[in-house]
Amino acid sequence: MRRIDEFQQVAPRLVDLSADFRLRDQTAYARWYGGEHVRPDLLGSFVYGIPERHRDAIRNATQVACAGCNATVSILALGPLAELGLIDTAVIEVKAGSSEGGNAVSDASHHPERSGVVRSYKPTGHRHVGEMQQEFGDVPIHFSATSIEMVRGILATCHVFLKQNLDEKDIWKIFRGAYADEPFIRIVKERSGIHRYPEPKLLAGTNYCDIGFERDAASSRLVVISAIDNLMKGAAGQAVQ
Image (cartoon, rainbow, N blue to C red):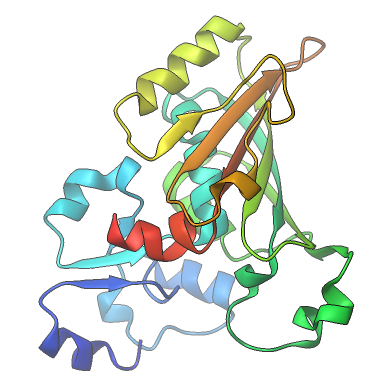
């Protein structure tokens, strides 16, 4: 963020893959990133870069802040339900590959430590929740992240407690209505086979976000499952889109 003026002088349009300008509010930034923003005058000037939600604003923008990978996979999963005011509470658990940790070397990314691991690395307080709250307003979001032995990819399991009972046809209608014309969103819900629901392994190197769901017949819970390649739809692919 300290070089933003330099970049603006040479690029008429900026697409920022960092987290610097995703949040529009200085108080929210300080809460989630643990410090004051050095360019608060620019907060709110960047369009939040999820094309499926902000296409018109992005089309005319000169500054776009790409969404975080965990935020992307979660927002695309819950967006259609949230827009209709159907969510009472959402509990999201993501399983993420090692490349989500960025390019800095750490003990946690060292292969002997990573091999065979299923490690809870952010049970609460993940900074991408700030982006979800910004998009969904007052919808209660509870988020946890787990690191697994996978290089790239994210699988989000979203336990959505609904305000009203919906049957399967209603849910299909909601997701198809929201994403029927979206080239990079696919609804994956098969009756048989190994890959009945979204699987990040199948998305490596693509810009797709696959979304599936299953109703809990014994409660108001709807489980929405979504998957992306965090380096593509969660980063560079979405930037190009």
